[in-house]
Amino acid sequence: MKTIVQISLDITNIPEALETAGMALRAGVDWLEAGTPLIIAEGMNGIRALRERFPETPIVADLKTMDGGWLEARLMAEAGATHVVVMERAHEHTIREVVKAGRDFGIGVMGDNLGAPDMVAAAKRLEHLGCGYVIHHIGYDERRGIAAAGRTAPSPLDQLAEIVAAVNVPVQAVGGLSIEQAMLTPEYGAPLVVLGAPLTIDADAFKTAAGDVEGKLRLICEKVHSYGDVGSKG
Image (cartoon, rainbow, N blue to C red; front, side, top):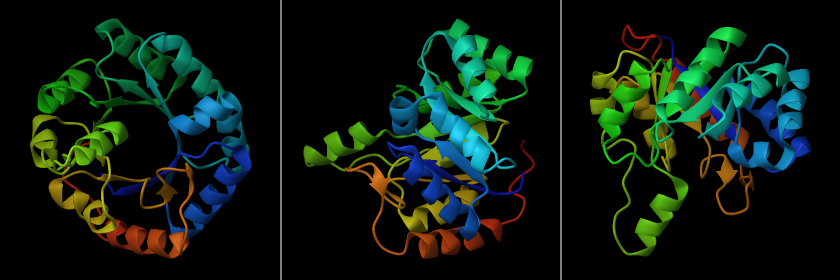
């Protein structure tokens, strides 16, 4: 699969999300993600606004679905999303319902292993239940809480190679990566590079980060795209 750069729009209002999305696409980003904060704040209107402004761009709706899988996925598809996210910690039937909605409405299903006690087993479960992508995810609160206790927080890079080897679908690593780490994830066999806090989004304010964000994104996109095809998966 060719490498893909995705920006997570963890922003709480539509105008700023649209502005940041436009800047990201100018820099070479391939996919837009309507982050969970945007969906909570603006609902389906956030997806609709992104689709109206960027009619040809893939849009991931980061719902983090735990129940009501088919309905939630349908609503996002009807609003213009091309991909939805379901949590591995959800019941098997919820994951299967999201996968069914994916077939019914022609959208991709990304399974997120956030919070799983065994990340590798969780990735395998997501693939077995029909998810077309695995998100290997170390959460925001988890990282901050562990760091506040004076311990080293885990990184999605810790088990990334193991996750990639365990499944036959594309993998994405999420959770506190530095710019350098994000650019290196294709070397682990993960073709989907997601950029969010703290690279492009202020993790505390849920706003676009200060500084030359577009320049950072351009650098990352050039590096990631230079990998070309990563593995034979996908």
